[in-house]
Image (cartoon, rainbow over all chains, first blue to last red; front, side, top):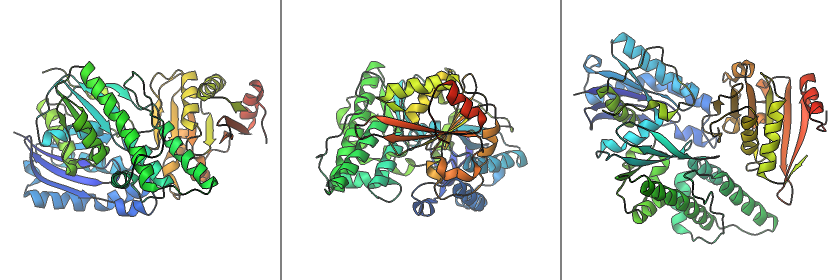
Length: 336
Length: 150
């Protein structure tokens, strides 16, 4: 039995969730700031953290009301400790520490990516050993999980993250921020007509999206110099098919090499329809995607990872620091 | 100075790193895809960083352990922002700072620094030009026998 209150504020969103046991979610409140950021074509860190300060207590009150829970009944306070924007992380961390101190509750510092991975467990038990494809604005990684809460990064991007490549291509095509979902939608209406290089098409489990991004930029640049029109839907489709193909191929190869029982996908780009369809279709190993509502940053996923840590009594001291980069492998718990 | 390919840039970054000192600040200007992160990989290699250096765009700064710490900044997402972000403290740590898209944080850059401009030539090779601010950086370029403008 556990009742965990979780706070997540690593980037765009300030979110609070209360999770009872494994998957009884009593509330999941997200105050999205995406409209403000859209005006700037990206997340502006200082705006992000200032807005978090303004809404942290409102979101917290709403969450407790919705869940009909008193702070006294909570077993532990969980919070994202990183990676993310330092200013934004600080706001959540300060709130969490204050609550932990004032109500004498244990504090659990959660790695943001562990949260994304355990979003899957809000709907279905993860089967170990498994392979997790982590895809978001800041990450593109293949993580081998031998048992519960053990993380071995077997592959990662050598340059840009996949979500970052989507956003930058979106910017070149003058699409609204974030570019990812728009490109995904446009890709369905287009055809794969532009030749783009298959990035990092080798035997390793690493990715590289910088070259693909440059190829798209060059293509647009050359077309405009020749006075030719680019068909955005076709370019979106070409870019997406190439990007998804390399993600899917490498994931399947790693899953086979590591003899896993399941492939799971985590992070904001797990919402991408092109990726969902291609991976499900091509993999013989069962694939688990988080439900769409848990793909983007949310506190429910942080609560879900914290629930596992709570069972292992993995608590943090009150001098826990936020960091823009925490090593996922160091979060691993021993075999139980 | 011209570079034929990625490896050329990495090798040069590695060589440059040997001449760096704690507190060194290098700014990298150039378009998306010109190779700023690639060049930083070379600097990291020269500093003895073992981990993979990849894009810091998302978190604005990434920190690596080498002979000295390497702080890899990317101000790309700070366009149009003039707030204090606490980066000044990092410029004063005993590490090497590499800053991509420095024009977005022009106001807080330290006075002494090495400015590197990267451009793409029409045949896809890359060119770097150097502007040293401060004696230490002039000396560094002279040691390496690199032409620069003032």
